[in-house]
Length: 189
Image (cartoon, rainbow, N blue to C red; front, side, top):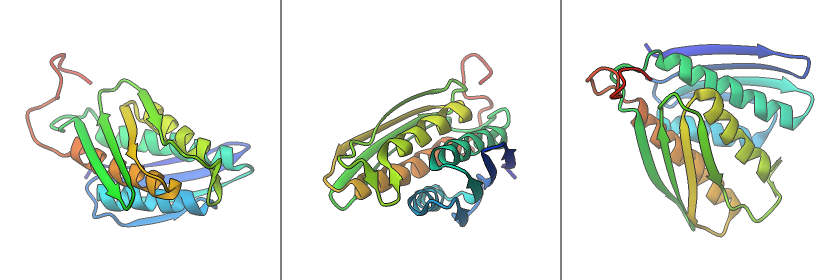
């Protein structure tokens, strides 16, 4: 089974993330930030990962950042040497007025280009820039390439939720075991 638990405790936060890449989409998320809970549950459901997150902390910024760190580390560790995975995953996901493209490459090289195109500074109980920071930090700590492009949309909630759903679908495609050894001409990732 490809799973991992990461626990991170600092003076600012106490975070525990458990992921099973071969799950069914079950989740239990409690970060104290309702919209982040909703986004992580959506990502897990559409990625068909089992995901448990518990987080407490002093500031939303610290919680968001540390959850992303732990989630990235957990995904990277759960993949191990990345033998037999597809490596690359893409998804174009609609949600009402929104249409979002997400592409991931589990290359071992961290890079992100994220534009959620939020018009409002705050979405529900979290600032829009913190959600972009979450995605960037997740990619860096997961050591993968992440591109998120909002193709169209008016409602910020819909654009961001479509992005997290698309991320789940793209990750599900990238972690899929297809055989063939390490998916790199170098022989390592």
